[in-house]
Image (tube, rainbow, N blue to C red):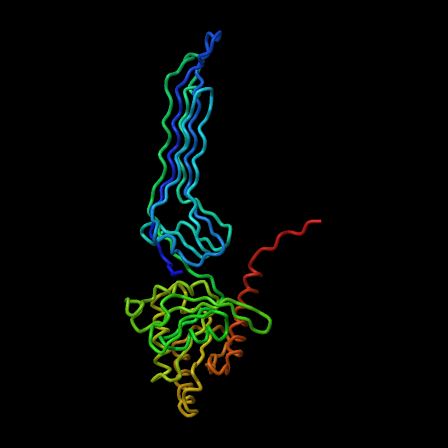
Length: 356
């Protein structure tokens, strides 16, 4: 299945059914009077968050969704039925925007959440509704109200606890494949990863979700390389795991390039907690590795995320995904940040009052 994280679609709710003009005509009933029923309400356009989806690929092949029109009123006081809703099934983490791409309509983050995008039109009144003491046989009925229509943008932001960032060929996909059951494409050329990958990581009996996004290069916020459009998938994460290639020319410069792109993207990514790791440590000699670590330390102090009061700058960790060296220590560091974030969220969430 192909990955698609953005789609533009047209939706329209159903029109209301028309009211009916009808009179009771029965033998031996001299003054039957009006008996026209009301029209039914048109169907709504509803977005529903469902389990089992992780892409918006279904909306590449169908871009128009229309709810059904309400049933028309009928004689004998029979009202029209309600029109069927058009239900858009989307994965967790889907945001819905107006056509301008900025005005948010809904943010569906939990399975079962629903949001009404367009409301169906009300049904028209039948002539029975217009009966008065002076007008006993009205010959008028209302047409159904028209439904709403709009063009919307669906944008998927994967829900993960931690996100992997770094330059192309920094070892992100190899790391994800080592620590989880995910099997991303791995090759020795840049931009092997073309779409985000998710993996469930287990460490010390705990588990969390790790997201790997395509590599960033200098100028990604201007559209260079694959751009920064995939950074939205790490917006919801609690911590960023930043991998730096130890075999690169200058670890400090590589670190600053990615930090600059995070800052240019905005949305609070540059302020998120960060764990920095120097990957491929087994591919360089000890002296070169020591030099890269010192360069990285200086870069973290100058361009790293802001530190809390009394917090010391975290030293970069050294790992080798192939050999498995230092991997567990990095995962534990990531888990500590995730656990602290979950505790803070639990404390902020009001607890229900105790009842006997």
